[in-house]
Length: 111
Image 1 (cartoon, rainbow, N blue to C red):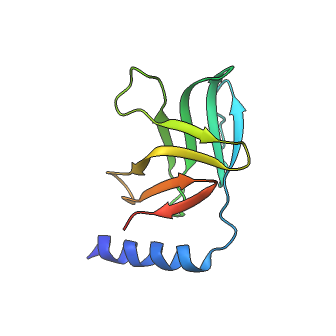
Image 2: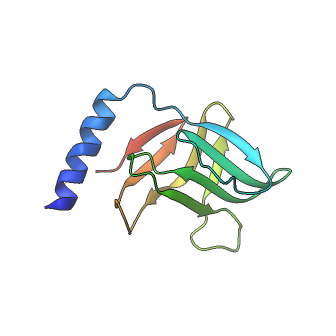
């Protein structure tokens, strides 16, 4: 039942929240404070080790996604700093259990 209510809340949030638009910040280390709607790409040059973002559902959790080719699973960045995309989808198996895709700077919920 709790999962069902979470899905309904995500659906209505997606309908009525118009501002959600992620931007990229490049860094060599994970910042102490993760800001909402920022996708932090951590690495050096064009080689990123990890992508970090605050969960877009509003739970406040920090999500770290490995980007090294040897990692499984491994996420890939595409797009620009103003319109970032991450693939594959992010499917949290703990906490809020959100499932989403970041595409062209916007969150697309997987229902």
